[in-house]
Length: 160
Image (cartoon, rainbow, N blue to C red):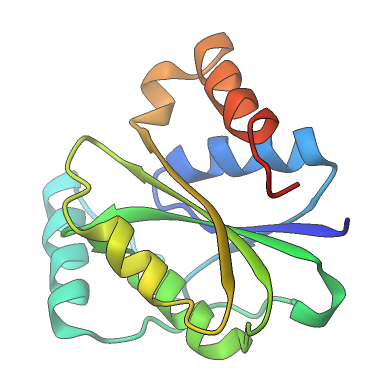
């Protein structure tokens, strides 16, 4: 089964999870990056991110290469911003034209996922959502504990 792991990661949490999943599944990995990569303070980043979610704006992405027809399974990871999947993932979904695919989803957050899982799943109408999970502060639990949690999700997945 040809698999792609696509993710956005502002602070590295989703990147940790996505890279581990891609390694375990021998999958292609695509990191999405926004065009506006200004350095902001932690508080400035929080305000900016919440503003992007509340405004509903799509954030322009740097060029990437992705052909959904080339994959049997697409795994998508996003951080949670203001109880929603981060806007860069929404931009990707609106551009990528993913339909009729097996899709697995993961979210990364610091303990406040709110309604993000439902909203994330709702972005994939016309696809078969085969799995969904979340990871709380992956960077805090990197190493063996995180690797085991990811391995358990992948191993227990009937979607493979």
